[in-house]
Picture 1: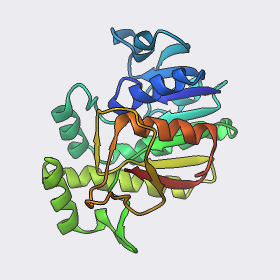
Picture 2: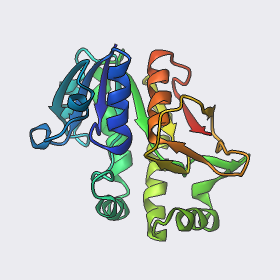
Picture 3: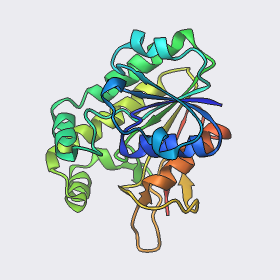
Picture 4: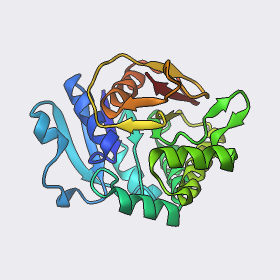
Length: 239
């Protein structure tokens, strides 16, 4: 398959590139300015069919220009690159939380001319239910406690709700979209291939923790690309 990956230098995006290449897929790796990238995940892998291109995820025309030939477009868009500058990415997300829904609208608009291309959006955890009918992002108390637990400023609640708004944009669309909510804790780790998937509720382990490595998140994303189970739906993951 031919897979496009927006945010190909990010924490999850770079691992999706590596996972897809390792399975023999063709990858178009997308970033704000490909000419500025000195070390690329595809170079490290050293195998597979990869091409690097620039894209502006907030501009529908820019996205449409890279769609021809793609079977699936995975968007790991973040305002800034958290893998290289976490503090900067957090502050920009706080300052401009509407960017997530703006990007979702641009992606959907671009795909109007390419309806056969699937869209997979890597989003946030805040729109998940912590119990039936109780969404994390809807409770200041729960959300602030989660941000404290993760070491993020409480002001980041605006970005969490921005991710939730992006999911709402997708839910109004008839395009072939999928939304991926990672676990609460997502971290560089190792690829185990052993995890559990869920729909709209947090997946927690025996200790009540919601966690996943970026490597296993990439496995789940490429699994979904190869065998679609969540078209026009959201899914989540955890150990």
